[in-house]
Length: 442
Image 1 (cartoon, rainbow, N blue to C red):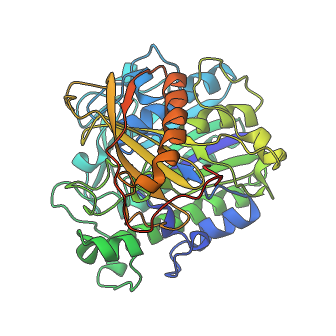
Image 2: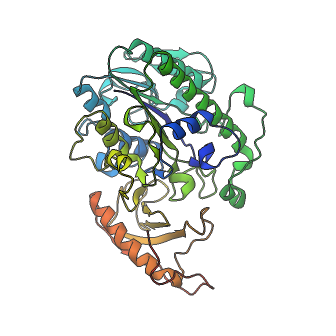
Image 3: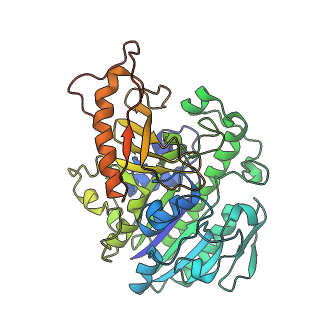
């Protein structure tokens, strides 16, 4: 069984058609979700590039592996998916953005996470622009790839698939899109979509302002081209007779709130930051349907190993969701656990209904990966307020909800090797807002 991880950067879950976006951006993803396995409740475990990628590669939380903020290096003390697939006799390859090494351009061999074939850059947003893609090969020599950046990396991925089709392979393709271009704070789509205006703006962005009015059309154009690239990869697999024998996972590292929640594009507990698209096809994921369970990015590594018959290491903090796929009556985890850095030292849990977040108010965001004391900062009722426009953390009527979620938060902290005091937020009567006695808090 081959594996391809198709990994985008900063893509909101609601950019896809199956998630309700009406712009027709993702026919290939939608087809994959309908014919394979769709994970509508997929979430990042850390809404920042480096931390999310460290967790994805290792199946462990960012604080465990030391990549709790950007500009941290993923050391070799923690094995990656590539290490386990190497040991199982696979060819392993990495193409695109890494963001787990030192520096911005070429990545030292000892910092590549064990991948055998290499064609990447540590910070692709700094080594390339939309039509000038520069990556580095196994010898750390610069390679300029022709075409729009999404297409350039996709061409390289298809070449790798064709060259390794006769032996099991694990390929990780990591795009920059639809992340903004750092050098000029823009979202450059391919030229064919440059002046296209998309009419749909998600309600949270329409309500809260930010830069969506300026940036969303470009962002959608990038998403559209990514979806076409996914279709090209799947076409290549089809033509080579590898479709059913190759697991393709599509997901992203985190979402994007277009500066509506803080002065950056992510780094918050909100759905716009942590809710991500995810679908799988091939092997056991064919005709898997739509999973109801809550799935975290930290669960990807154990799931892919499990799906290929490779034992899941006991020290992984994520879990394989393959058993939940085969047994839909299994409710899975009652929440996903999220660590937040750089804007705050924060923690959050997301259940099917509630979002609950705490912040270490006295922590140093540049030096502290965790804290001994947190204060409640956010509570959202996602059933009645899916766009998180009304923070209920100070609502007296939701005091019981906070008590239940506070205890859940403690349990998830402990599972991630953390233990801390949580200070309740001051509560006051707020109109008619209240949670009814006996309500389900999950």
